Length: 115
Length: 112
Image (cartoon, rainbow over all chains, first blue to last red; front, top):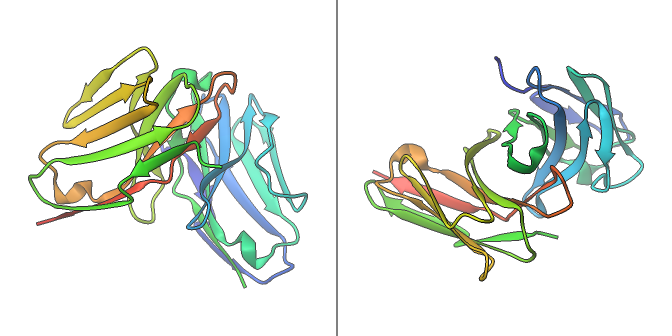
């Protein structure tokens, strides 16, 4: 298996533009997570899905952020409009079944820079 | 807010030495996990210890958990330059299913 795949790896955009980050989880994993990592705030969970259904989106910073999972093999995180403070590395992760005793597998991340 | 805080924030040792990192957390947990992050890469799971376990080993890694003190430690023995990375503890709080909360991380530098 190729592991969790994220695209793009790097994104540079201007303030106000729409940004879409993509993730393909490991086949067969029921859970998908979106994280954001910054120097100031560390690693934060934004939202996670179970069987394509959003379970907890309490970490989504504001309405400018939205996430979808239309099927078991694809998820998007969209920021519209983007702001400079959204600059961060965004990670997608997946895990097999319930997460209590399951490790999460992380993708390589998307480094977003908003100018 | 951060559930876990690692100590020290940064650690520099020579190859062959042991590295010990500590993690303190605030509330009761179901399990505690340690992850490694190489520069510019995603996190990689190292080891999971359940709340009813006190010690666990995996290769050169040894993890301890003291639920009475709400703390855990990660020991890397006979460190190698390839161990240079940031190390994070992560916890799942009771009733939060799969929601991992990460600590602040320890940056480990292993020099030749």
